[in-house]
Image (cartoon, rainbow, N blue to C red; front, side, top):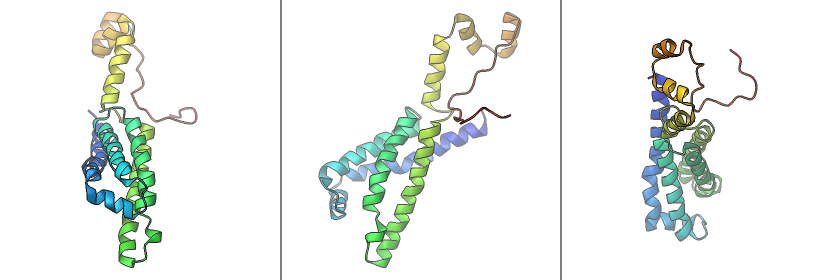
Length: 180
């Protein structure tokens, strides 16, 4: 197992924690009241709904299951929350504005992370990659199903030739031809 695979896994886990843990507060009256004070219409509905979106998106990214969809849910959550709840430019008190600015910038950084995960996916140590590998193996001809489960040395002896190497799951998308 490569260290870069572990970095992808740990990065997803660390990224998702804030959304999972903070989602529970979206169901508590003080959070709904705070949102209403910030001008959120239908705060009693929208705040719990945003908690569900944050929880589902966070769990999706944590587990690496439908990771891209989960990251886009988090993006959908972050944009309005950042603009409405952390609008530091509209705060009169200097110390409160400084706190809101810090929270605004934190959310901008989280938005960047969500966009990256939404684009690149969960990586090789995710449920998405595992499911994709199993589907790929099950839909392949018999010779390739055996090949997917056998060591390269056995394949060479059995088949008399090496099979071409397949491209790993969730490789980055490139705009042009690959340059090696």
